Structures are given as structure tokens and as C-alpha cells.
Length: 252
Image 1: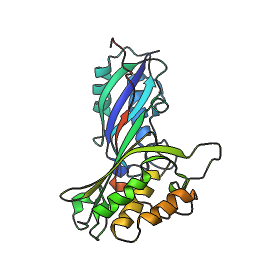
Image 2 (image 1 turned 45 degrees about the vertical axis):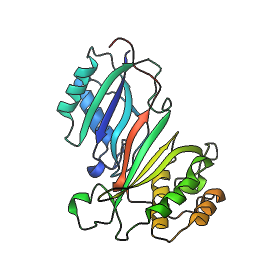
Image 3 (image 1 turned 30 degrees about the vertical axis):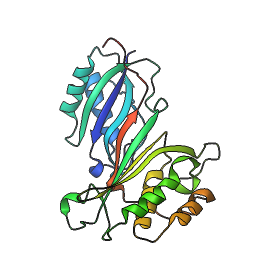
Image 4 (image 1 turned 30 degrees about the horizontal axis):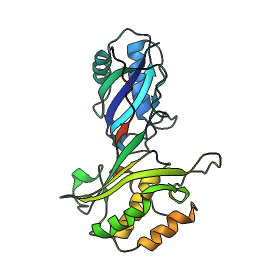
């Protein structure tokens, strides 16, 4: 049965997250409902990872299998004709039968946006908000602490499973001053739940001169989930891109 890789964007404002849930509206549910209308049967999709309530994506990826004889471009058009305006399919391609959207991801990029323009209604659902002007230089100094391979136990607030490694590698963490916001750019081989938002808020606190490099090192090297009590607002987080090795089949 052919396997397809799908790249999509979504505005997470109206959703309780990516994952199918019984008590709230999810992005996965919307997509699977649309696919069932096309296929005639329920199709389970598998994403590169979950995003939380109100988190956005520019380049989320999922895979699915289908016996329906539809070209990738026809899948894209059919899905977009059925999905709500805040979920858009950007690309569909055929991949090898063993491709896995989650396990074959090489790296991910997340961006976090924070603005001091707290009274602008157009930023409300799409950026973190803080009234204090941030010291970007100090944030950058603290950001360098996180580069490389570390145990990030201190930067996840989910229940810790002792069987799963908390070691991750961050290859990029840039702090960029833009006209109306500060952008934090994260790239790495994977991220624990809430890890990006917890690091982002830690750096924001540093930008407000409430933390320094020594404080950040103490949190990171302490490897204790109770050491970091910070978590940035969900609205400012974007899954920008998921990187894979070449997965497209030569014939589509």
C-alpha cells in the first residue's frame, strides 16, 4: 500500500493541540475526518510530533497509507477543499514504505516570537507578550549555555519516564531583534515536551535581568525538573521545519 508524506501549515489558535482527543477539537481529527471522506475508510495519520494547544506550524509533517489511486497533487487539492481555512496542506509526496514521520526526522526547527506591543490585537494569538523591553545581548549570552548535547531533565514539565533519554542536542539557538518582536530560533535533533517553551521563557527572564548565565547553568546542569519553573505562552511558538534525509520516490 503506497505511503505518502504530507507537509502542512496550521494556525493553532482554535485547537486543543495536534493530537486526537475526546474532550477538545484537534488538528489531527480535522485531517483524519477529511481523509475519511476522500478514502471512504478511516485512515490513521502519524505526525513528526505533537504540538500543544494554540501552538502553530509552518512545516509540520505526517505520513499515511492509502490504497486509493490518487496522485500526490490530487491528495493535496482534495484535502485543502475539505479542511478549514486554518489548516493548509502545502505538499504531498510518495515515500518509501518504511518512511516514518516521527522516527526518521533528523532535526526540527522551532521559532518563538515575543513582543512588547501588548496592546496590538493582531499579535494576541501569534506572539508571546511581555511589557518589559528585553536585553537581547544578555539573552544571547545565556542561550549559548544550551548549545550542544545535554541532559534536559530540568526543562520538561511532563511526567518523567526513566526509560526514555532526556539527552538532546541543540545545534542552533539564535536571538534576533526584529521590528516588532524578538525571535528565538531553535534547531536540534529533538525536543522534550515543553522544552522549547521552558527554555524560551528562561531566556526571556534573562532578558529582563532576572536571571544570568550562572543561574541558567545551575538549572541545566542540575538535571532536576523542579529547577525551572518557567514556561512561555503557547501562542508564540511555531514548528517551522522538520528535516529528513531524501525520502521521495523517484516516480510519483
